[in-house]
Length: 376
Image (cartoon, one colour):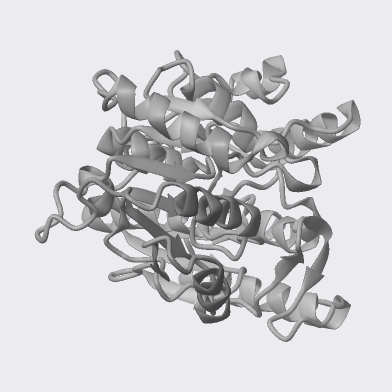
């Protein structure tokens, strides 16, 4: 089976990371996968065995997702976006896929609807078309957006892959599910790599690990953690800085952290193994980070990303915080003392046991897709 996945991450790298996890599952089962990535390059994410095409990249202007910038911070104009669309269609015509998977669209990425629509139009009569979405979506700001999404799903899509557990996080927790849409939903379970297991060097042992994903956000979280580390310098703190160029942020934070004993370094590929030994994690609450922490069982304090009115991470964090091993501190209420109190609270609760949660969503996605392609 030939699989084509179209994904564009605009702020962090979580969307691309999840798409690549799906791609690896298809490859493991003997299928050929092409991923079209439209966000900024993310060389720290592995793409072995996958044909990865980098589109002319775009990113959001901070949390303004209606304004797209290029790699050199200029506005992505119509000519630039047309080059992306042409490349998408060229790759489709070359690969002739049996299935096309659009990550998040049409539930999001509406600013890129022209290129998605172009792909859907050429793919409609030649292959199975699926949408891939995480557990919790940003709720539509008005009913018209949900209605438009329904129209696109009804016209073009054979199914919607919901990467969560229907019993614990049904889609209607964050998105209005019509009768039509409900008939096209396929719950896959959570999409996560295999558990990382312990670190060969026991790295991260008894540490409070502070992170903000692979993107360039998290400055307020990091600054508060530095101040907390200065208050409690006897604790072992490790801070991991993401983004394409973390060096300036590392230097800035190191200047703030003098005397704290805080270790600051770029985001690491063995992050998931560090969590296996960590005393606590302090992070945002993106989909991939949440799954990493659930699998590792690490006591965790979440400071959900909520800039620009974003609510997805807050909904996820509050859901997880029903368990005492997890706590939520909103960015508006974040102080060094509140952070330290939350760290102490989750450490007292002990490690989380993930018994009963399904993390095999990538291979379940392969199974569901294979069945849909095989249907007459």
